[in-house]
Amino acid sequence: MRTYILALCLYSAVGFSTNHLTNHLTRGRRRPPRSDGFSVASDVLNESISDDEGITIAPPPLDIDGVHLPTVLSKVDKRTDEWYTSLLNNNLDTSSLTPPQQDVLSLLTSTPTLPFSEVSYHSSPKLAKGCENYNIPIMRKRAEAWRHFDVDGIIAHDFLSPPPKSIPTSLSLSEIKTSLEASNFFLPDTSISARLVYVDDVFVPSLSTTSSSPNLNADNCSPSSLPTSLHSYFATLPDGATDELPYKETTKRNPIPISKLSGKDHMVGPFNSQSCVNNQQGTACFAALNTIKCNNVALIEVPADAKVEKPIQVIRASSSPSLDTALHPRTIVVAKDGSEASIIQTNIDLSSSPSTTTSGATLFNSYTQVMVGENATISHSYVDESGGIFEASVDTDEEAMEREAQRPGLQNTLLETISVHLNGQHASYSNAMIAGGGNGRSKVAFSAHLMEENTHVTVKGLCMSGGAQKVDMRTNIHHIASGCTSEQAQRNVVGGRSGTSFKGRIRVEQSAQQTDSNQLVRSLLLNERSRVWCMPSLEIIADDVSCAHGATVSDLSEEELFYLRARGLDKETSRNLQLFAFLDDISRDVHPSYLGDEKVGLKARLGEKLQKIMPRGERAVKGEFSSV
Image (cartoon, rainbow, N blue to C red):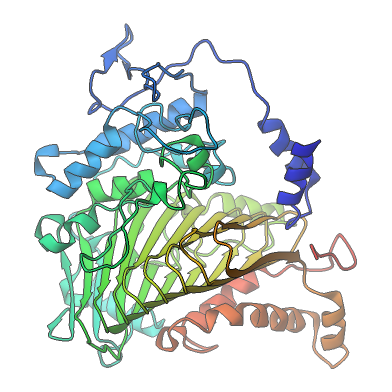
């Protein structure tokens, strides 16, 4: 009975699908082990063997007592490991890797073991699912971090076509610039401090405006040309896979590893233990893949005490490659003590209507790192508009659903990992994060570590999903030092036959006394065929804090619609007004030069997407409904 009550409390923020709760409880039951399971390992794993059919099989991992753990995998987990192994080994030349890349490869492919832990509330920590063949947990369909993600859809594509080394010859750079300027994707040179433009992860100098002034260093570099001072940060992975936080040498704090914060009674333990993985975002394995496979790094360094008044723009454009391709973009932002800067980071398409016969699927595996020093301030706008535009009315029109199924962008996968470290006192970081693209599968994982006293983080996120999309956004705000504050607001708009999930985690360590943190998630569920899951969470170890969180899910208010229509507005205009007001609380935090207005810019494009999500006709379910 206690298990059922706990599950009901966990899902009270959604409160719409009892079938989902039943399925969740069913998945938790133990099943008898399969007798035909085997584990496919990477070629770089040590002591691997081959069976009679030529399949490489990894030695069973060892637990902390040296006892072999079972490696029985389901069919989909086998395919997932095979898929990841192929992606890792494809065109991999280990001799050309830099020392940080080799370190990450070694961490990823070393024999999966669970280091000794002093966690007092686990008598025998268990190696996590996903660590059967790799030391860093790999994507698992039934894992908490991937339950609402389309794992079958992503592994259906191999993404083994080599990434382009130059932009397609069919593209005219002048035409690209004119087109992007007309849509306000491409801000004028007079409105920016620097611009770094990538097409299919190929740096385009003729469209970029680099800077090497005393106030700003913004340029493209390769992993081999990365400054030595950033090597350790380049090799830092999220989800605690890199246990050591990037403290300054001058810090007055005792630099305790992530796994041991708050002492043995409350520490999270080893990153690859099952108890720790249950609360992770699941993107460490893809961040490791990005580190090993990336070719270009967008590097932005703001020197100490520099005030960069105009924004710095990083544009990642896709030309819809003809074959299944994996891209691994990397961005590193370093704001040194006393500096200020604004970053606008965007993912866009060069073609609004890619060919349905020549376009292949794209895996966009991006990793962004931001380090904020003492008294430094960073404003970060992240906007994804890649993957085209989904079809409207797919919830009621079967022909529209057929067109949506054939849409090239529905085959694409976006994985975006954003990792922020505030390692100086009085550092401030604000983020406006908009997932408004048309990719079939999107997962945005944001994490912020408040490592020094009196630091502040503001996170405002927006998810818009329609058609047959699956969107997953996860955030982790980690309070480590005392006197820190964080503010988080999340908005989700879900329509069509899409599904959106949000899980926001705030963890307050024992050392983070006098923390002030707030989190509120609001979702609009616009029809009966769409789904939304909202899971805000607080983990508070400290005892002198002020923290609050909440979640609401509802449709547009019939009472508000009646009020607007009674004053002469038609139904469509009334719905538009409600939706725009709902989005404005988040979108207005995007840098104004990129936001634009209702005619041109991000605001206009969001309005166009809203028209695709907007329900047509009357609702099948009448009356008010809400989770509160």
